[in-house]
Length: 261
Length: 244
Image 1 (cartoon, rainbow over the protein chains, first blue to last red):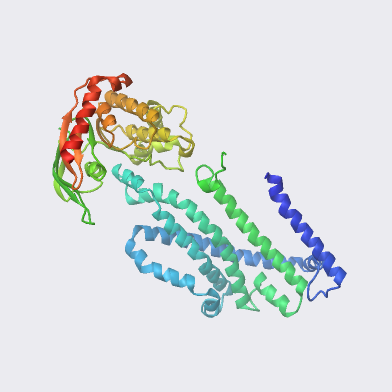
Image 2 (image 1 turned 120 degrees about the vertical axis):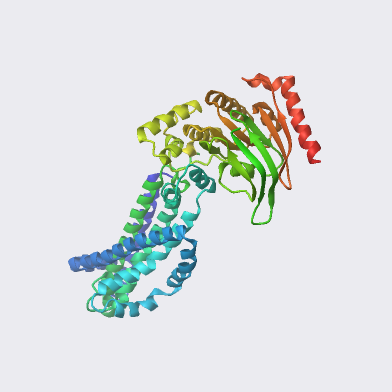
C-alpha cells in the first residue's frame, strides 16, 4: 500500500461520513439541539471563532506546561532511580499510588489547595499528575535495559557511573522514553480538559470548561465544534511526538526502520 | 610473566562453585586458549582477569602493573545508535583522546580489521562476521597489551570464523599482543594457540596445559597438516581422559 492510499483512504471515509451525516440530519429534519449537521457545527465555530481559539490556546498552554514538567520530572526521577536502588525502593510505590488514584477524584482538593488564587497552577498540576507516570515508568524500564556486557566494557575502560549513564543507559532508554512521551502527550491533554471541567466557571477559560458550558446551554453545535478542536489538538500533539520519535531513532531502532524485504 | 593467577576460587552468591584452585601463568606474547565444556568457568576466569569480578579466594596479579586490557565478547556488543567509527572509538573517547586523533586511530583499527569503507555504517546494516570485526577493531583501537576474548567467533559460520581466525593471528603477530582466548572448539584452539589450557567442569578447574609448538605464521594450509591433526587429537584426548 503506497503513501497516497495511506492518507487517501481515511480521508475518503471521513468525507463520506460527514456527507452522509449532513444528508441524514437534513433529510430527517433532526432538531439542531439534538444532532447538529456539520454545516451547523462549522457555523457555530465561525460565529465564535476568536473566543474558541483563545480557549484552545488556554488548554494547549496548560497541556504543554504540564507535559514539559512531566518530561523533566519523570526523566529526572527515573535517572535518580537508576543511580540508587534505595531511593527507587522507597519512592516507586508512591509513584504507583499517584498513578492509580483517579485524578478526577483528587482534582477538587488540588483546586482548593493550589488553585484558590491561581487556578491555572492547579490545572497544570492535575495534567502533570496524569502525564507523569508513563514517562517515569518507561524511562525507568529503559535505563534498566542496558546490555550488561557493554556496561562491563565501559567499566573496563574506566568509565564512571555518569559516563555509563550518559553514553550507554541514556541512549538505550531513549526509545522507551519517547514511547512514554507519546502516551504522556495525550494524557496531558486529557488531564488538562478534565481539570478544566472540574474547575468550573469563573477563572477557567479552556475548552474543557467551554464544553461543559455549551452543554448546560444546550448549544450542541458549539459543543461539536469544541470537541473537534480538541480532537485536532490531540492529533497534532501525537503527530509532533511521533515525528520527534522518528527523527531521533530513524538510524537504528527497529521500531522505525523500514523492512528491506 | 604478564599475569599470574594463584589458587583462584570463585563461588557465586547462588552457591555455585565456578572455579576451584585454579593457578595459571600467562607470559607476554602468548596466545593462550582456554578450552572446556560449558560450565567449566572459562568465561568466569576471563572476567576475573579483566577485573570485572573479584575472586572468592586466591589472587590475580600482574608483574608489571595491570596492562591496558581489551575485551571481546561472544556477541559483538555494539552500540546500535552509533555508527561503526563511533563504536570503534569508544575506549578512546573514555580516555579523552582528542576527537580527531581518536577518529584517525579508530579508522586505522577498522581498516586493519577489514572494515575500510564501513566507518559510517550502522551495526544493523552489517553481517554477524562484520559486527564481530567492529568489536575487534574497537578492542585494538585502544592499543591493548592484553586482549581477552570470550568465544568471540562461536556464533559465526565456518568461512567467517576461519577468516577471522587468520586476521586475528595477523593482529596478534603485528602488535605483539598477549591474547587469552576462550573457545569450546578444539580445532579453533589447535589452529590459533601457542598454548592450550584444558579445563573441566563442576567445579571449574585446570585439567591439562598443552604447549603447541607448530611455527607461525600459520595459514589455512596448516589445517591440513599432520601436526595440526596431532595437536587437535591431543587436546581432544585431554578433554576426554581427564574429564572422564
